[in-house]
Length: 309
Image (cartoon, rainbow, N blue to C red; front, side, top):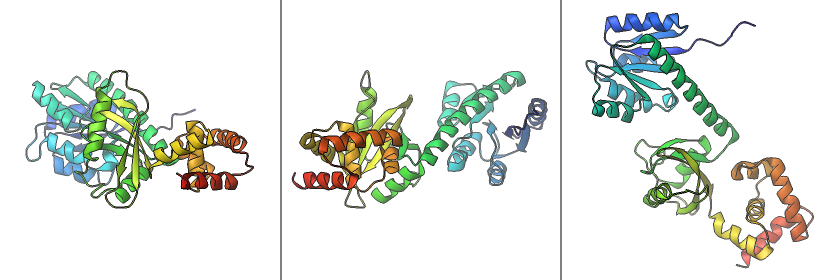
C-alpha cells in the first residue's frame, strides 16, 4: 500500500540566502515541505494561514530577533505544541539558555550539518506528536487537567479546566495569570520532597464565586512540570464524612458524593479518571453496604448524612 502520510511542513526563518538555499535543498531531499521566511514578522503573518509541524529559527536577524520571534510564536496557543529549533553561530551558554527560555526545544550551531539537523528534526517531531496526541485525547475525554510549574505558571490545560478556572479566579486565561500563592508554595513543597507520592491536594476559595476548588497532584511530567486535576467544590470534607459515617472506602465515598451531586456514571468516570465499568462496580458495593436498591435512594441517604454533620 502506498504511504498516504502527508509530508512534514518545516518553516525556516533565516535572513541568509545561502543558508535558506542549503536548508531548502536538504529538507526537500528528505521529503519535507519547506516554507521560507526571511524575518520574524513575515513568519508570524505566514503562520496565520498555515501551521508548520516544526520551525527552524535563526537567532540573530535584523529587526525582530529569533528569541522574540519564538516568544511570540509560543504565545499563540495553537502553536504551543510546535517545536522550535534555534540555528545560530552563537554558542555561549547564556545564548543557549536564552533560546530554551524563549520556548525552543533545541539549539544547533552554524555551520549546519544537514544530516544531523534532519535527525534532530525527526526526534522532535516524534516527541511533539506524542505529547500533542496525549493532550488532545485528554481534551476529548473532558478531563479537568492542567500542567503547571512551581512558579504557578500554567503550561497547558484542557478546555474544561480552563473554563473552571475562568469561573473561579479573576484574570484566569490572561497571559500573566498564575495560580494563587498558596498553590505555588504547595507545588514547591511537593517538588522538594524525596519519594514524591502520587497524591496530595489543596483546597482554594474562589475569588469570583461562593465555591471552592480542590487542586490535586496527579504526577510529575517534567523537571518543573506537574500534572494537576481540578474539582469544583470542597469534596474532601464531605467525602471523609461519608466514608466515616457509612463505613465506605475512600473511592466508594467519592463515587457516592458525586451521585449525591447529580452526576451521571459517565461524568463520575471522567471526574475521578475511572472507567464507567469501574464506577458501576463501586456502585454495586455501595448499594450493598447501604442496604439500598438504586442511586436515588443512595443519593438521598448521602444527603441526609451530610446534612447531619
